[in-house]
Image (cartoon, rainbow over all chains, first blue to last red; front, top):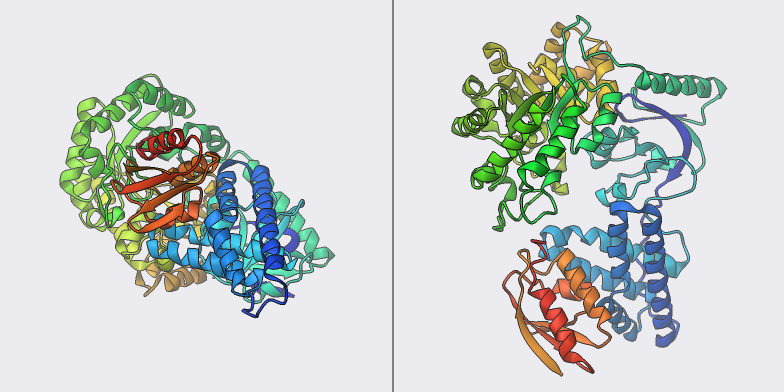
Length: 550
Length: 88
């Protein structure tokens, strides 16, 4: 038996299925048959046991998951909540129902407060389910954490679930709902997990059944026979050896060179990126130097960090992005005024401009670090929306002595005027995540509009094409550094639209490298035309996939 | 019972991390502590209670402590509320 869905990436996995336990039904509001004191005792014991269980999981998980779980344990132990539960039991309700109602009322309160507090509502729901499961003596819902490797099957995964996923044990992911842009798909792409999403019927596969998950075809084979198992084992081994084999430079079938670069968030990831065949760094995010600090680090402190990264890429290109604070990563010393729409606010280069000394210090530190190394250092400004901003950034960078200064294209206005921006800027790098968010006017951190966040959308691709055309006409490089470059087939489309280099999380390099080798530049341009002609992201993806497999 | 009115210093109000620091300190005080904003009073050791007050930057809140050593507890908790944890 097989199931069909949309594969993410090109990987293959074989393992036994574990279904994500279904959420518990709402406890019935029937009068309790026990005494009030007995119900109160049951509730108190269940709350304490749940808190202890959550805390133990946190100790095992460690890292950021530990903090998330510690906060959940405090919720289970909360005195206000416990008072509320007792009051509800006092009116004759069962402990299950009282716990359910008390958590629900706090959840509604948090949701009504919106923002950060609203997002904690899912944590409360999770704790509530665990306490009710404890009371009913059934298995707790949520991500399973067995002591063996498994293939996880779920309806779809929430961000809170994926944060707790033990990636060492997950061989593959299958969802019955959700599409190629769902949270699960994004996680799978980032972490290079074998995944098939939107596989209708997959929820019926029994726990413990062996399956083969083939992301390149989107097929799930249930109970594979000997031949199928052998073929899968061979394919998995071959991919593993391919990933380890010395990787050549990124190029198309006709030998057109498309350098494949790494997105890095700290100097620590450099070694792994080089091992995976990164030909340089296409996006070095510098926020980690500034987060958790009350003021900007000194020039010397920054220089040491930049220098250690540059040293890992002798003679190679390293593109450093100036501090990109705001929206999802606020920094109090740059901008602490509350904003109604942070994604449209004082962020990116706008925030740096309001604090020019921070920008100058950072560029000075980068220049000093460059002098100590042989890396070919480029700098770029985040979230540039006008020609005037472009000139502002490049003139400061050149004044400080940096030889290659460019801009990130994340806002439709800069994509549309790329033919003027690239007269001044030495290069452009397209941030597809933000470009998609701004083109479709859909907050990329908001789950309710997540379906808009699809870089295959022809409107986004048309804007990429504008930048590609401008780059070709002016002889300036156009890079892509965003989620889109990590999607192998979309990467080919982006090359067809004029991208001259692709930067992605290092885990995605091998698949993209293999995909590029399959097509010539003419074929990539043909794919680009097909995608541009489509009416929707889904149509674009389908049209290119059909042409690629014909 | 000892009371003190303080103004919240944290830039983003008494949310998330600052609220968690504050409630843990209140829980350790060993005596009942209450926090009042406007006409609503909650147990200061309850993160859900404190969060539900929706306390913002520059809001005035009243801390009330009962029992032995109330003044020392007030000093400690008031100091937490008047520190900008978002800047730390």
